[in-house]
Image 1 (spheres, helix red, strand yellow):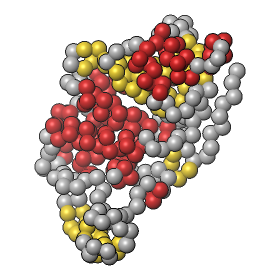
Image 2 (cartoon, one colour):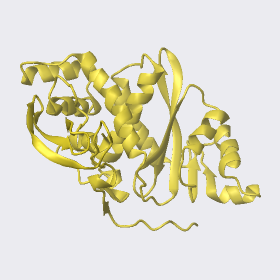
Image 3 (cartoon, helix red, strand yellow):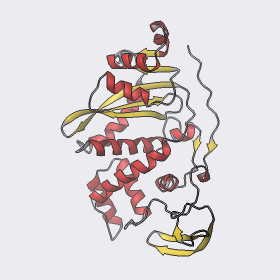
Image 4 (cartoon, one colour):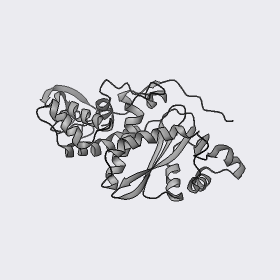
Length: 298
């Protein structure tokens, strides 16, 4: 029916590919190690710039954070495991004398969402090109918003997501425009906006050619879109304990971080690895995957 793109073997992503140590004052590369500094988050290496003679430490995403990096990343993982903000607070209080505020956890979610997504969006996953797309209802401020997502069939990698307040052609078009790779085959439901958006973004000269690539399914009869439906079930498990988002910006930030958790942190039961690993993005994350991702992202 179609020719799938061959998926390359895993490639180790080294930190040096994305980060280069520069002096934060003069941007010089002439740096030498210069003693060490003890902080709440452990002992940090200090550096000295040979050009401007100023000293500094390498920032790792936890600058001036009052809580330890282990407690912060544990809170993020508990939240995406299904706990509410207040339940994360209660859980942390049982195991640490200092505890944590539920609002602190919320602020960490917003902060690290932008930081990690800026890093992961630069990565190029090796996907098959057979995509499944759908949208899910999101309750925000008592109104009906939508989260659009597109997953690769072979790797289960979420290749594109989009948050919108409406479920129409304009939203579907913006959703497709975010996709970096034109699909070899795209499965969607029969929402009219998908058909029009596909024609505008990737459409061929003849509509008959589009019908071979863009396959519109009857959800109640054709079950080929169950792959994306299963992912949306995971999203519902996370969203239902919140009941509703209180602001659009927080909804976008938390759902964006959910995508990071799904692609890079959570081991997919169907493929026994994370979707990122299946897509050839081997970041060599350590046992604390959240900590490794934050350090790579900063």
